[in-house]
Length: 454
Image 1 (tube, rainbow, N blue to C red):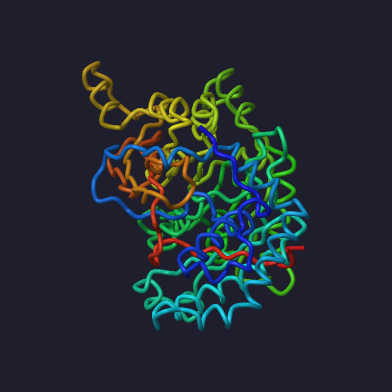
Image 2: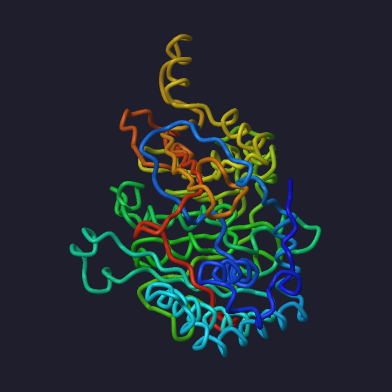
């Protein structure tokens, strides 16, 4: 069941009654405004679970937010009258801040009120800078201390990307890629933490690593990959299908790799349209050996990535066909799929399980039928989960975020059993429950005025 987000004009208390509210109560009002004017990246707050399986169930509170709620927030954020009400209220709170702070009954309460006033000033700056609709975010992905110590000075710096989140187009659910979703941030940080664990290293044949992202959206994951490697080490191709999403993706790539942010050592991702359904038709109409997608997709990739890209039941089958056509068939190639388990998308989640079998099950079936030689189908090598902390992140992502390997992401456990020339035991699947992700292991997102990306 969806809930309507109240407008600032209907929920903010009169400031003449400010003295009647303590720091906790005023923080609640600020939190409501922040939900509208500085929303969190959906699904970023997570922590790694120690055990596997879907043990947690969504509470009633977790399931209240839906796409209707998101639409309501977008409408409020672009409503000039409501924004002016919010800014006037914040300005009044800051103006009365000193007097309100002194009214605190204890030293601790006064300190809390100081922090609340500072928070109000920060939120006022955000409201002033995002009136045009899009949100600018800066993501910081810290590197693993062990890897940073082993590299040069530049390799010790966190990877930073600047992203413009545009409003999702009205009545067009396929434009969800205009906004950043937490799955891409989580997978990016895990890969930055331990590139080798995901097969992100120079190939044994000395060739440049080739990385393809399906459904790249705002481009967070692709740009992190491009900044993780030098132009001599890897090439990255970021793809999507929706025209508006591709335009926003190109703008984000340009804003991160041109002008003051340009770097001769890093090659920007190549942004291209890609239709999974078209690739599925190619795979269905001919043998996989004869299928020839158009350039540059006629040359297979070492690594394929997908972050929260299953939102229709048929997508799993299309993606399987795409991966079978586009992934190199050797033991060094992997497909990583990370997806949140939403109660509203149980059919889509089930479609992944049905489309991508576990490697152990495929082996058992082959052994029972006396099959020998190379395995000629894609299957899940490993699955890991990240649990959700109740009350944080996007509320409709209540279960786990999953990653598959052999096609899906988690911990990239490589199967070294020789099955050349067709080894598709490389999916890693990461499933996650949205949680409080305040540790170093996931990026921090900040919003800023719409100036960082031109």
